[in-house]
Length: 508
Image (cartoon, rainbow, N blue to C red):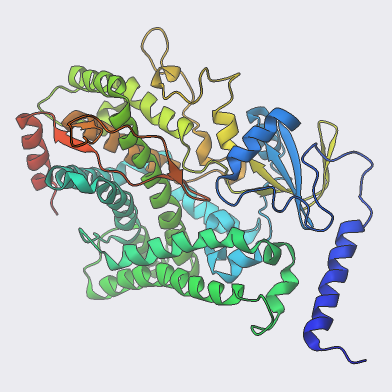
């Protein structure tokens, strides 16, 4: 009896699954506790694609701080405790600095991204360049761009208060596009931003194709094979991803040829290459600039979305923050970066935003290079280890009433900032976010400037009553509050004048 190619291929795949499932464990020690899975698929079906961190946080009450799962052949460990995360990702970073193999992400073209790169020479080059470009003492060079873009947002909020979400998203994109490419985005429907946002949004598709990630052999199946629609999806996303990297990069190269390039990361890197001062290949320049946008704009937008929601629903927080700004800065000018050390409550609001609704509730997973033993449990080589930032940030033993938004958690009895600036959403160890200083500075100035100039309140119903707003978020990787309209009004005629004058003065 002859077998057709599809059935023969399927037989090989099933044999591979069976071998992977029943091959002898490398240790007599147990895996960490976790929910019982099914024979072949493991815990597939028990883990929601949307907001899995909430499920893991609930499971913590049943299984403890360390949870083991299996998705097909892939072992997964969830860490719900900060001390455990620090032990593995920082103290044992030699063994936990890799990323899991993700063939679907690669097919989508996202293997360019620094955060997704496997541990190796490419990643080392990326990290070296990132550290140089975004080290703390390099931050002052970005301040003019950040300040100008924040002032643009203030003017937009005053002109079109109903489009709040569009304005803060544009700020998040504008800072990165200007810093990386020297490009000023259009007030609306910017082509470059549309390309990048489409590519970033589509990467959310990757978790839907878990079998491809666990069984790389699937990627070699012909396009006509039943169920191989993932290839079409991957090709569409890869086209967007390539555009996101190449189109703004080509824009900078053209401006350099014309002698009209604005100083930025890409132009400076290319010019240093031409002068022979350094050499970073164009491939790396494209990848690093693309990473900065894809990582920075989305997370910054998430934090700013939370900020506007918090102001509208927590009037006492808003009033106290405005009192601090009025007392320290006054009402005759806008806050600046020089004021930051003297505004502890504003800093505490930033900390609490990142704790209460972290943009990345689960940081990108680390992978074990080698078998490991932790707290008497066996962690096999290749295990994907996730830090559940949501669970850590909502740990009742650390934060009283964790669902309550309360910046006073970070203020001591003397009114000074009390807490570390190591915001957990920025990651850990060798895989921490190297753009965190730029991102936090942009968010901080936006927070301070909006509080100095606007009152934010819930929208009103037809009877003039405040509309109650629940905390609702969407997203599989980076979370965002659902789109809302707020009542946004200038605090005074003086505030209006400050915005107009600042915006006019910062125009290039």
